[in-house]
Length: 308
Ligand SMILES: Cc1cc2nc3c(=O)[nH]c(=O)nc-3n(C[C@H](O)[C@H](O)[C@H](O)COP(=O)(O)OP(=O)(O)OC[C@H]3O[C@@H](n4cnc5c(N)ncnc54)[C@H](O)[C@@H]3O)c2cc1C
Image (cartoon, rainbow, N blue to C red; front, side, top):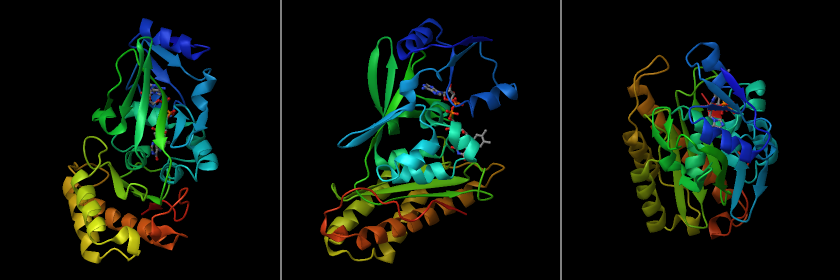
């Protein structure tokens, strides 16, 4: 195995172009497990750790441009207000050691349906900045996942950053595992209220071959909120609306039976998480100064990732 150690982003792109089979390594918390267990024996490892810009982030007017290798710990410590859903999801990843090394770029690279960042990226609204010596393209995150542990990157492309919409309202994340820490999700759910566009977006993990947005559920909820004037009148969402949203989320899932849980349980759990996270996020929206008058600034850091 040859170890490639580019000192700059340009060198990394050139190395990937020259060796398209090279496996990038950032935090190594997925790659090293695969190598140690002999699941993978790449000819080349492309170490991105000397490329400092991949560990940086910029907060713009509308989005945060998060370098691919920024570890979860930095997101939790520095970006809770801008990216509350991702910070909550990050809290549930592995252990402190894993959170100090593991990155969103690595989570996307691995593209596991159980990756915890995906529901948060989907619900916030995100684009992946994919770069090669040929140029840059922005891939909406919902188009990035192409199959079980497969993504839309070409062989010569690397993820430079993820552009994530800054929260304009409360966000929540929920994960079900067999214990409270160091656990792969049995299934997970992210929700983001976007009062500025009067929409709600959601993301589901570990309940299908790829992470996905339950679009029919979102459409139903958005129409119901609009019709009932909920964004303005600040009423609690009626149980029948929450129930139907949950059922549509559950119906959008296409999970499998595996050692972590049955398909039936996962489908049920998606519905429960959908209803609960909607309730938490909506109550937080109602309780905010100006929350129900349509004027909301910044993100919510209230609540906590729920892991049952
Ligand atoms: C003990 C343990 C617990 C864990 N718990 C969780 C958990 O709770 N939730 C969870 O979601 N994950 C968990 N993981 C998995 C892992 O930590 C995450 O997927 C993490 O986000 C990977 O980030 P990384 O930087 O370490 O990626 P790496 O291991 O370096 O890379 C992962 C994949 O992404 C590719 N890649 C990395 N950077 C780039 C780039 N810039 N461009 C293109 N491809 C790239 C690599 O080639 C590889 O295919 C756990 C792992 C371990 C070992």
